[in-house]
Length: 469
Picture 1 (tube, helix red, strand yellow):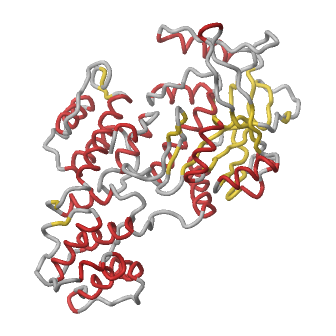
Picture 2 (cartoon, helix red, strand yellow; picture 1 turned 60 degrees about the vertical axis):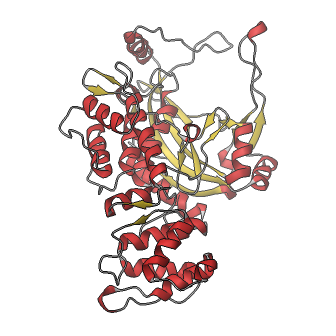
Picture 3 (cartoon, one colour; picture 1 turned 90 degrees about the vertical axis):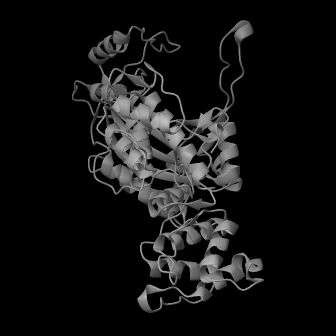
């Protein structure tokens, strides 16, 4: 894994979820930084002090993985920072990438780690399942395990006939053929895979299966269609997102999580992005190695599953005043800003692109109390808060609360679908004003605007909260 392919986590909860996903540890509930560091160290078999405080444990893991550990950057006092979590996450991902190209690995635990480096692969839970899936790849009927749970050599021969026929030029034992298949598919072999000389272990079969699926471009942990995937992602978000977002609580959470966006006036959009990354990486982790590309130029889309990339957007559909003034909620502009047009075009052409969009009711800070709090809170770290002032000369009221009303997943499969969206009017490419002034002025790329109420045929999943009217 190269430096260029690593997308840093934007919050400690996201980093923890992604770090935990690198391990072979079972899910055990809430994952904080310490639990993720411990699980990673145990999974990699590192000789470190698991009882050490976060900062020390992170430093020991970093040293073992051959990366620096910088005081006041990667850790402060006894606590690991977001930068430190990303440093360990990057080093662990690179270690995993290197491990997946080794010739052999030493143990079943190491084999489980290697399988993490195969994007989209779901290990078989039983030997019969592994054999069935190998038969599917070979295009032959399922073969039943023999006495004592032994797989037959012809199962591997059938796979070789389909994906590597040259391996059958000479007679080989079952174990030699298994090792040769792993070498052919670019995955390590495990020395203990032949436990009795007559059988291959589940770990050995999974290595063969994982390599074969990668060779055949099969993603067994992914969804066959964008509709199935969008439905699964929307289900995770509708269960995990709070039904009421208080600005102060959300901003404090972002700051404590190591986010760099907690000072932003449009906090609801950044809060949604970070919750999407956290929740989806816990449920369906982004592959640490391989998988869809998330970065296009300076644009980094928010979440990648084993097969698809998605961006998160929060759109204010209605507004009301806080405190309530007795007036009904007002409908807001249905048009919303999406992303850099060049990045969207490139991503769609290469692999498709999805949007996870939440519409919500914003409670506007009518008395200015939240604005005053946000200014004081933001300046508590010694940096002044820059306020946005509209062209009218009047600053817009801040959002003091936000409540999700509906959630939808929109998928653009290819360039033809993107062009159809533009022709249908739900996507519009808009010029952006240049950055800076005079000699420092820089050209900015166009950006897409979207009207999701016109995107019906591109919508693959949706959910409406009971509070929505």
